[in-house]
Image (cartoon, rainbow, N blue to C red; front, side, top):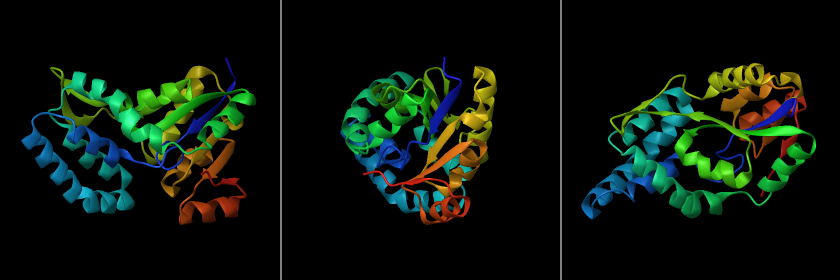
Length: 221
């Protein structure tokens, strides 16, 4: 097995979408037409709130946002994930994403997705991209129904860095030889923990940080 890995954030880094789009798809593909309409309208009305919370505090956003999954069937979530990948995620993959992953694989890296999204929603994407592993949030289920609570620790911010560090220890990987890729300054900890950080389609703050530390800046299309 490779002695190093490439860790990729997903939303905004490999694909042009985010967890709100994923939930919206689930909302539109569950239950009766009346229920679907209600959930869709509720999701649309909440988008400005989601955006504000995400910008303010990613951990609080995740805890609040995933409550919307409460009551959804585990079996249904898993089965809809395949259609959601085809309809939402696959069309949103940057054309150069595959090249970015192939470059890391050619230099001997294990490919690992690191995302604040829920694991079942990302599995089809991970399979399609040929990822070797995935670090993602896990929904708590009781009696086959989602509770709306994520099993801690929530994968975001500093916890991404902690998860990567623990993964490298567990898998016997050299952290200082690992690559990291993200688009957001909220992932500064994730990027700074690896030996070879990269800013991909960076927001203004991350672009500034990358320039200050002389990190590579990649603009995918």
